Length: 334
Image 1: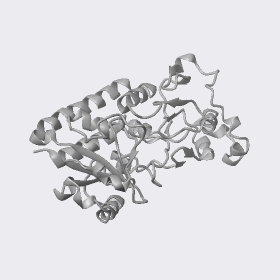
Image 2: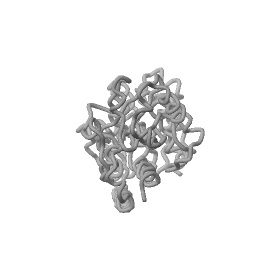
Image 3: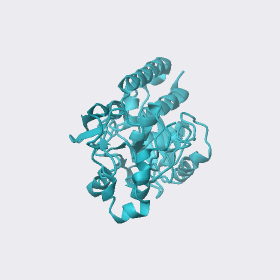
Image 4: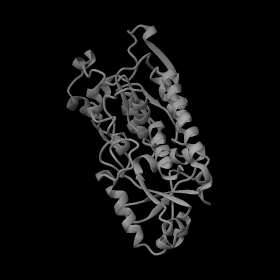
């Protein structure tokens, strides 16, 4: 774990003063007095050229994929933000990030807290930040690197993060381990390897959504060679595709992996239904009372699997991908 002490902190004004100044005194540009050998310039996913330390020590990931990648690379960040639709760090990452504090909600970090942390580099992506004004304020605090425009290619985003953090070799090994896990799981699927799999999220207002191939879970299922039902076997228009209750049959497949944000175990990869799975269990109970749900083939066959929505139905990275591989293996492997 990296030390939170840093000489620059002593030179900062109080958080209240910084906020009153609009964070203008925090200095996001690299210190020109530093030795050039301690800096490097990279081009991020938006095409922006960003000067960062050669080996960042105080890393602040402000999205689910960047937090996932930072932890997978063995780095404990100085802080992060809550997961999508949650008031805490994503459930599947909590065990790895138990000592990491939150500086606010996704896409809305507390700028006062961020400033006092004095990060070397801030990592974000298009899954969390659309407000250019917020990003501009973050740039006044520290170099900001965007690792992905939209989060649709988690492997590319992870590789970018590894390079930014000076851990390209470690990142390549992490991906090799994932690929090995995928090959081993595919070999164990047997006859179920031809099954169709639907990814469903049930919202808090009782409406479902399905996921295409572009986000992490969809790409993992493709890696595993599993089929997707019609409407999920293509790149979608965005994060998820809402389904009206009149078209509930669109959820059906041989197997339904059913998540709700906030669901899942605090331990990555666990399928035991703990308190973190309350939202998934509650959502399934709601679904049972929805007209047409009990007519679905997967429901009749008992093939509805509650999963951690923070890994399956949100933006993620290699750690989320491994959770998904493990869930599929436990469910479908012969």
